[in-house]
Image 1 (tube, rainbow, N blue to C red):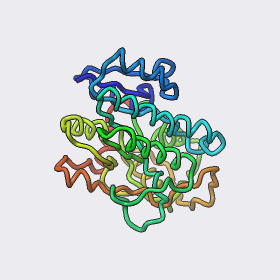
Image 2 (tube, rainbow, N blue to C red; image 1 turned 90 degrees about the horizontal axis):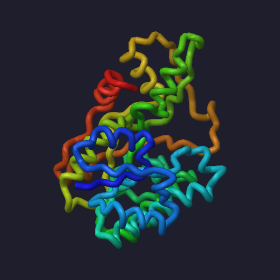
Image 3 (cartoon, one colour; image 1 turned 180 degrees about the vertical axis):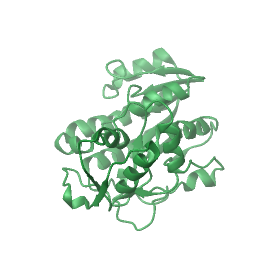
Length: 281
């Protein structure tokens, strides 16, 4: 199986290159894998002839999306439409990576795949949701995989930020304790994508976050506990750290489609963190 990866130099892309190396991989990124140039991307597809595209390329800097909204839509919406159109024209299966930000975060329970998404309150979420809709419209043979609170080797991620801040120079760290989510490792996502790749007739939207939930404060405490770091962490509210893009209070994703389709469950988030911290970070 020939798999073309867009955004292959990003955090998830790098993990996929390592963990899916038993497939014939075609890693692409800028400038040769420019998803915003439809003709150029289509020529790449003609030349490489993949069986599957794993579409990771995106603008993921949430706050930058607010001030650079044209670029966010060009990458996340138009870019995804270009990839989907090319896959449909050439009979290539598309597996696209999306985000919890397509929801508004207002529910009291985890969001499942049959909950209506709107794009939420951020340009990032709205542009990614527009990309999802373009994929559904243009490429019937698709799987959309939503992830959140992602960390992986080389970063950048919350895990890397916390370990850098815990350098002994700060008596305490304030970390937000009123946002809930599923901390998720790129290793866990790569393994889940392997299962999806093994099911060629599978389609639809899947949530691929680790099981269990935590606040950012609880996540930070667990990182330091597992690393044996005695850093003091103090809980605080989101309002104490205003950002250009509002963060969803509830980023939890239920993995209903994995259950319904008989795919293996995602690992528990603390176990996934332990696996990650035991290797090269």
